[in-house]
Length: 425
Image (cartoon, rainbow, N blue to C red):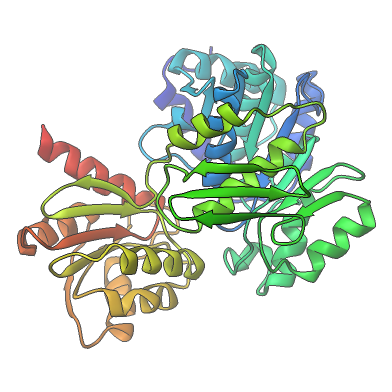
């Protein structure tokens, strides 16, 4: 074996291909073929693409399928605290040894092909899912869809959540261009589900050209809330009186409905109402409006684009606090930082900015502070070099009835969670 520890494997993979993001299917397809792997699993596969909501939809699908008694394989990215979070079998993170063994098999098969970090992980997930006796595989697309490594596999159901402006350097500058890239996961005459209430024309045209059996939220299925319950409505064949999903945010009803529609689109899959109710009650997704401390209330959220910032704003408006709101933010340099922070500016009484200098594409501390200052010049601002320092400053300034919201990226939330975990020890 090339390496004996997971950290060694991951460190090596980071430098194997000099480009952090290198979209295209040629490399990963060749390695898949050289490994002798087919581009389909022995069980159904659901792939999930979209700008926001992918993680929530995947989590709902997984939780409901597990409650149904299915053996599941789930692939997501990025991770928060441990790489193992990316690959789960039956709801449990894959252990270090299994990952190292899968990496070794992919390393032997690649025959010198310079895979990216994400491509290596995707192939390892495929390898591990092939070795397991699974009833369902769920794979989250990393970036875009058409040229993402996950797209080498042939899905039985392709899911596209919301489509918004993000990753413009790779996907295009408007929703039509981005929608075209997301629609790349659709397959001819296969089932497809879209959870965007206003899908781009490019997506609809691609589905029509392929003859995909596309189900649209608001047209073919919907979520009707009735107080603390809701109904999944689908062509006279829905579910009534469902519990609200155990994920924060009104928008999670649309994500849950999209997940249910995806499962109902699998040929021969009989979804029971009891499994559906149990799955919705048990679903968990760290880093999404997650409370990690009381008094002052501390909430972390991976929101990192304007659409996600608007959803976070709605959450903050709904969950009023008795004091001030302190916001800790650090973002990547290729994100619309001013727009995202501007959306939240009227919810925040004091900002604490930080840099992500240790992260590829991370925005420097000075630039982060300058971006917030431009959009929130009338609000107090404290600048720090690291997320941990910004959290420390916010915690020192906050009163017991205040709240602290920490957002901007997965890296930001991960650093914050580590900081507060260290305080608890």
